[in-house]
Amino acid sequence: MANDTMEAVGGESVVRLSEKAVAEAKRVLAEDKRPGIGLRLGVKGGGCSGLSYVIDFGTERDKDITDPKYGFPIFIDPKSSLYLKDTVLDFQGGFMGRGFKFENPNATNTCGCGESFSV
Image (cartoon, rainbow, N blue to C red; front, side, top):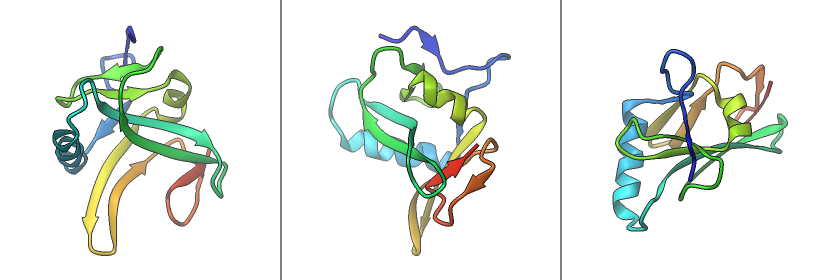
């Protein structure tokens, strides 16, 4: 079990979610009946800009940083939290592009699709 919380100095979450992202995550989690499931956010090497965002719904892993602030758990591994600090996760439900969108102030370069970045 994780013993860290996903908070920076001053009690602010490392990642903030828009109202639309919270609503969509809650919708998906309500359909998924697995116990202990939450929203997993991360970063991995790859993509056209060097790093790619990872978003999944799963259970807590050892050493995860957790944040239950939105009424469901958010899990981030400690390494990814360094790249995601102050990021806002939004959800766009438009006809031309439905899905979660990361708005990362740490990214110095992003690809055209917005799924990869560099710092």
